[in-house]
Amino acid sequence: KPPYSYASLIAQAITSVGPEDEDSRMTLSDIYDYISDHYPFYARDDAGWQNSIRHNLSLNKGFAKVPRAVGEPGKGSYWTILP
Image (cartoon, rainbow, N blue to C red; front, side, top):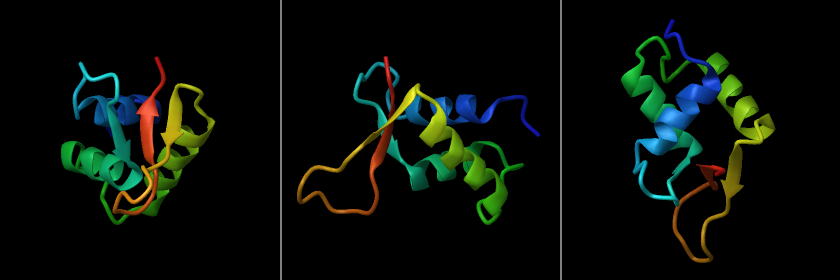
C-alpha cells in the first residue's frame, strides 16, 4: 500500500493536470484513473478505495466541487483544490 493518505492521492491527481494552473481540476473518474494508473495497489475495479476517495472529496474542506459549464459535454462535476 502506498504511504500516502487519500487526500494526498487526490491532490497528486488534481495537480498533475497543471500545478501552475490555478484552475487545475479533474473529474472523479479521472481522479480514479490517475490513482490506479500510478499506484497499481488501487485496482480500478475495487470499489472500497473509490468510496474512500469520494468520502474525502466531500468532507475535506481543501477540495471543492466545480460544476461543468452550461452545454459542456460529459458527465459529473469537476473537483479542484482550494487555495
